[in-house]
View 1 (tube, rainbow, N blue to C red):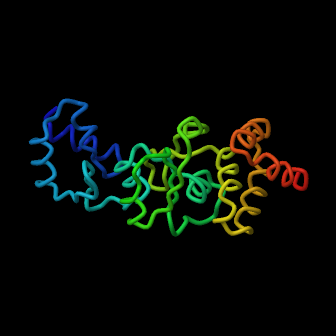
View 2: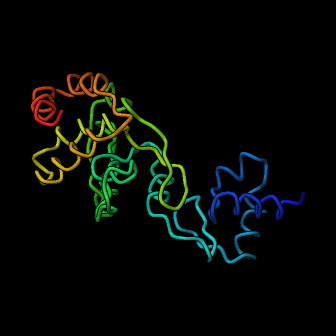
Length: 197
């Protein structure tokens, strides 16, 4: 298989996107990639990320590629987990405390920070609506994040999220309560659960 054939197969497999890191990982040179990008009129959508003309734009995937250390959270996590009906107007990300985020904030993203020892709790991979793998938090962690940020979230959105979570068949209440204790929101979570369960 030629480099062009390999790159074309990668482009098809990734729903019209090519990442420089993936190309380098299979031993194809940046020169070959540049030639392929130019010949196939691919658009550079972010540093190290190219998109074909017929691909669906995927803002979540572009953000994840540009900021691989960030995790989609809060309202964005609800959407990715199927717990919200519509895509949020503003995407929410969580990063470790001390991580620079001014560029993200300037792009209109909501940024939340958390200490390093709690950052990794509940990270999962899921698919964006365009079929690309992105990192988000699981449902239990997301509910706790919403309670932690309740001053910045509409009360009806919080209530709707908890009601939707309680109706899930695969909910994990013990895990939810462990997270609630770790994130210092156990009192609020228990109050809601007592009413809804």
